[in-house]
Image 1 (cartoon, rainbow, N blue to C red):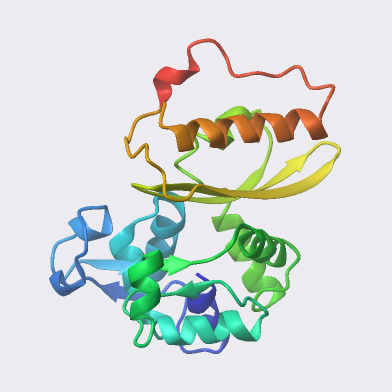
Image 2 (image 1 turned 90 degrees about the vertical axis):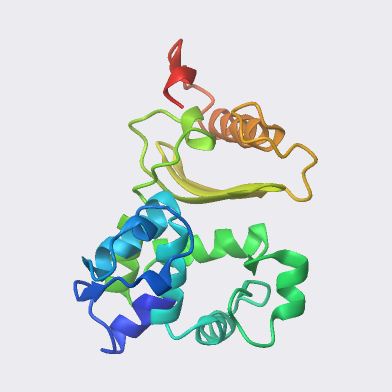
Length: 229
C-alpha cells in the first residue's frame, strides 16, 4: 500500500483510476482472482480488497503497479525500515524468499510502520490519512479484534500462512492509544481452525492488553459470539 500511495503522491498513478484485469494476473481464487478477463475495477477497490480481506491476487497486482518489490524495498529502506522487505517476485531476494516466504519483517517494525501512518508521516499527511482509513476496515476480525469492544476504533492488518499467524493493531482505547504486533513462527499446529494455537494466542494477548490499559472495563464477548467466526 505504501508503494502504491508513493506512486500516487508522485503523480504516476491516481487512486480512482480504472484498471483492467487480465487472466495473467491470477494467483488464487479470491475476489480479484475471480474477475473475468477484461473486467474493469478501480485501483481503490483493489487496495481495499488487499487490506480488508488480504486478497493475494490483488496484492501481487498492486506490487507490480508500485514498481515491483525492489521499488517497495527502496521506500522501506529510505524510511528507516531495515528488516521489512518484499521477497516475492523480487530479483536478488530468492534466498530470503526460500527462508521467509513472500516477505519478511519484525513485530517492532510493523508496529512502527502503523504508527508512522497514524501520525501522518508516511508519504504525506493526506496519503497517511487515506491509508489509515483503509486499515480501519478489517474483515478478518475474529481473532485479536474479537477481544475488543465493537465500538472501539482500531487500525489493523493481519496475516496467516500454515506455520504463522500475525496481527498488528493500533487501538484507540479510552485512556489512550496503544499499538502491538504479535507474530508466531514455525508453528507445529497448522490447522485452519478457530482453536489453532496461533489464533488462540492472538485472542489471549489482545484481551490481556485491553484489560491492562483499560482495567475498569467490564466488557467481554457476548455469549455465543464464537459462532459468527
